Image (cartoon, rainbow, N blue to C red; front, side, top):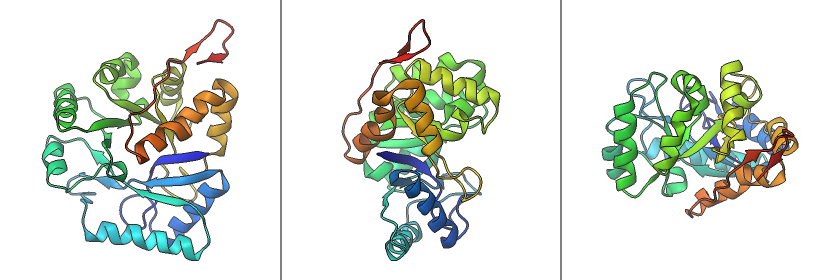
Length: 256
């Protein structure tokens, strides 16, 4: 079973699906590729671009898509969340309910900026954790500063964060640097989730079959189950996540 915790499938909300027709296409593609549950995670807190705070319009878009998928007989489960852009206002926005976690669990999907700001990172990790939440860092393999120094994610892990990498990074869609960084993270067992971060029916799609097969072939069934099922279910049920330490042996094969 595949659960995709990061998609931009809600219609007309951000730079993802532009209308309901595209949303339905994306859901159908996901289901046909083996995905049973999709987290809808529109961009949020990008001031002046995609504010998308939790309000009635967001809830209505979510319910509209659920109803449309039911009518189209696409038996895929939708789970509401957000991809929250990192600003110093995040703790306050959490407390006043303007941003929400994944399925209203303890887990917040947070996107850092593509320019490094160590002080902001440290501040948010500390403040959000003190509020009782846990951070899932979205696609760090795409950040230029992480590509230059991938070991920096270990400090995030030590502070209780989790790492989500993108399908497109693993398959080369974001270039060699992102792919090498994603594979480094996979090889050293720092990845907790692998998601599509899908944005359209045609480019950056919801099809998870190729990346699932890649993980299964190169890292084994237990690691694949952890990334695509065990940890996502843990988020949905608001449970403590399971972590395995993954290492590659001298033969280059995977063992957990």
